[in-house]
Image (cartoon, rainbow, N blue to C red; front, top):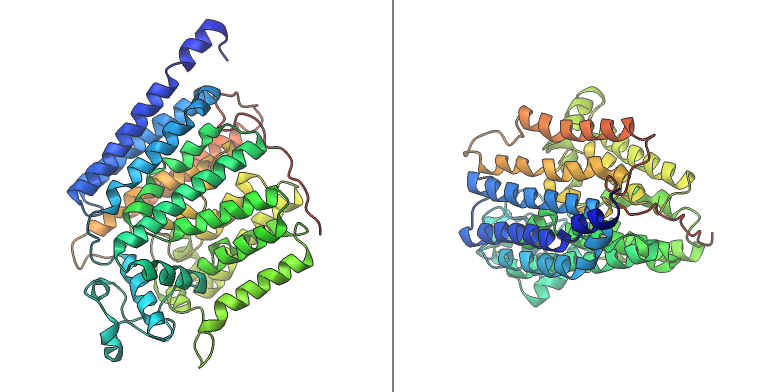
Length: 448
């Protein structure tokens, strides 16, 4: 690594260069909002590509000069806030998941069970609003778990407008940024790593622009990981259980809690899980909603699931996905690295790669943990998945499927990155080549 005046001259421009990267990315998100360009259109993809290019350059800058970049935390936070403001204001287009969120909240407020009611049922027409009539998949009940239903009702109690849900997702994003700063301080890692999450185009698009509640899940998981790191087993358990009740994906992280929480913590988690599910159980209602129908019928951007389900059946693949995620998490726990970012990112990524639906916003769950060399393939995935929005712009009547060439790019890039990382594993990375400034410390062991 260069020393003396040479190193100083290379490090000094970092804050200014980072500022320019952030400004360009913010401008791209702002133009997307002002123009109200639909997802997947050529202008949309061009502006997203611009934001991605600025983001990648920013990643290179913080890798080259992590210490200098850490002094610009205020720039990262300020621009993270600014780039999330313009997307809050444009109108939400037809088919947005937010309309289902509003519908589920209204159904609950009227005293009905969202797992028993379908939006297309004429008997519940009075619950609809002009917005909820724009939702898709009106023939199935809600697919969202109980904690998500609670979130919908809380936000709708303030406002049923799509903007309220987008604002809630953006607020969760910013909350994740603040918790990540605490994680980096506790582990002695540079604050510049915050940029990986805070400026990630996928996070800004899916939170402030599209209002997906996955941003809340990311906040819960980061909070759980930080609580475990600090030995706060009770808080970690409650945050994790709530995250699992928000979406089932993080359930595969359960092995990371083995022998790190007490029996009373586990009991409290079970009690919380029961309390969240209890209002939706009874009268023969399935509290997991339309999840079985999703597994049996719906497919998107999941080539591994398509291939395996043709051999062993859809439910077998679903259980294989869960088992694979649990095995990966257990491997990190047995190796004594349950606090490593990879231990939180890879189990979810493996399970998701075997899922029938792989929507871009699902990856938001593990973006906060993509801060080490060993998670770089997943960081690449979080970028290469963005072009699948091309499908949203297909003409009516076209197959709702990602073209084969685009699947090859998306998943091929992950494989290529993984091969490079594995092939160079024996060579100690320099500070310029590794995202973290120093190795992660061993995790403190909680009480069993």
